[in-house]
Amino acid sequence: MSTSFSVLLAFLALLACHSHEAAVLERSIFLKESIRLLGEILSTQVSCEKTNVTNVFAGNETDTDMELLCKASTVVFESLGCRKALKGIYLNLLHIVTKSTDLKAPCPVAAGNTTSLQEFLQGLHRALQRVAKENL
Image (cartoon, rainbow, N blue to C red; front, top):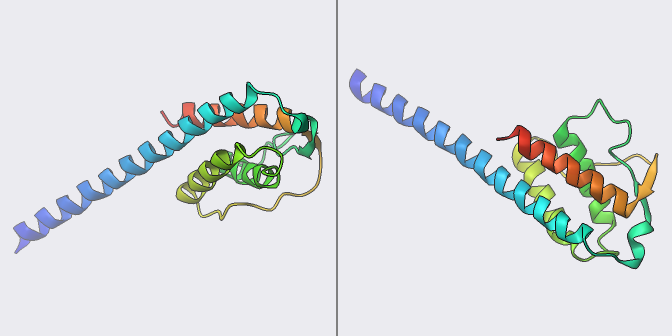
């Protein structure tokens, strides 16, 4: 009886390790895809790129990376009318945030500093690259 319990315990431990690896790999895929999409979006110009949006990255040292990405998902959602190509970024951010934390994206964003949509997207690109690098 104790042998089967040991085997079951070992199996559950392996299963837990595999689930964690799969979650990290999945997050990595969504991060890389978001970085690629943002690169494509930033390389094209549209008339609304100067539209003001909330700058969730300005002077925000207290939020974790996931909290910042959650807030960024709200800003991206609010900008979908300007650039339809942002839908993929929005969906990826939702997935990254909800699978990584207990946060429920999109997160509320208080009005504050604003920046152009173009500058916001560049900040998001840098934030995603930082998170991807930390998750290697």
